[in-house]
Image 1: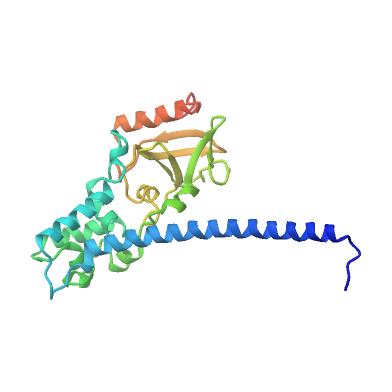
Image 2: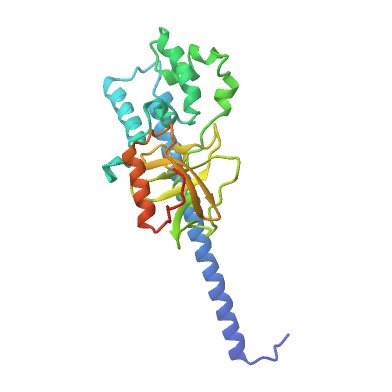
Length: 271
């Protein structure tokens, strides 16, 4: 079949289609790269933590003192991530280190219940080995049943996932940077925030046993953390309540300073 349109128009149409397709493929490839980067980052993180907790315990090849210190260094680096970026940064409270360094990130409160049993016992194995492989795997506590321990795992966000929770201030209102949606805390639920050492603000709904303050920065250090109430982007109340980071008065002042620098009206904000 022959087209009645001039050849030049057909050529121009063909070029346009090719450009649109090429543009689509470019965007698609960039999106795929971002996904791969996120998955790769998580895979490396999980592999590193797994190696530092469970997989190194090979009864046929006992680990050396060098390996034990390397394992401790890996764990300490996890909870101290970001400290060097800001002198006011605060690392996770000690009782939540277990959650951060555990590959599955089981809820720290639950892990501490089992840690107390391990600590008071006579096991010579590491806590993680005892809990999942050795005698501890048969322990089932009344105050924290085994099924609860296994089910409650805290979501630790990767670099790309974290972007969905980043908040910026525009015209005095809190807005999610990625979506442009106004922050609006649901009444009857707790909403939490953390301010990273690089002064990036993250806000989201708290979900006990699955999404906590430690989720935003994957257990890394924060400059400030707490609870807030926001209605249609307008900050109504803010408190430095956070068991994960135990923020100091200085940390809270740092957050207030951040809000003031971004022209948030604090006149009617409860604190």
